[in-house]
Image (spheres, rainbow, N blue to C red):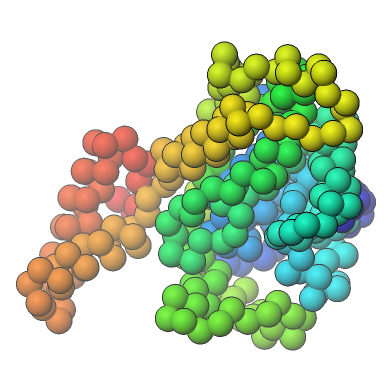
Length: 315
């Protein structure tokens, strides 16, 4: 656990990501939001590229880089771990079990980050990457740890910003296909990273980043949480009431729904839906290109009328 913010390291990563993204992606579209600290950035998690991309966007627009909660998977890549740690990432276990010492150290570390830092805290409310591009059930452990600061009145408010990151193609699309078929996930290693360097020459389309409407935790909890009960407990003890735990669960579900509202649609998922419907209903083995194009345009109009953001190149 622990992170650094070394400007030389950050500038090196900014230069590296700038060259890589220009090689792999056509465009990066984003919509900004203006808020005050303390801030939680809660993006969708579909790829390892998510937190790198968000840090790159902040670097590009001269916004302080967020501090990122990452899993211990990256510790198998020493050089990458050093670069990420010096760029604001800290690494934690996925489960703490009965290790009370680790839990208390983690809790105090996160509280210090949120209450005393000028950097936003970024983590993934889903906990892990979604292999199917569908949202996973939210995990409230880290979110509840952060909200303890508000429940115990150590901060007056916390701003939550849901962020939707949509890819035309994810970097791990082939790996996800094997995992969905039952092939075990390969362990992260330096050799695997070197073998994957071929992705730099591939075309992965566009990326869409949309910052959702900021949510004030004070406004969200409202009268449902009575914070006065913490006045009779020592600050160093953790007491989370049932109402507070329920508020954390509601907030996590609100974030996932906000991800859905901010999601952008590209031609690829629309084409897949049209192909699946045509081949499944008519038991056909092929579909004419002009018919597919017509179905995609019809689906685009339908999803736009329902309020979704749809982007088709050249249309």
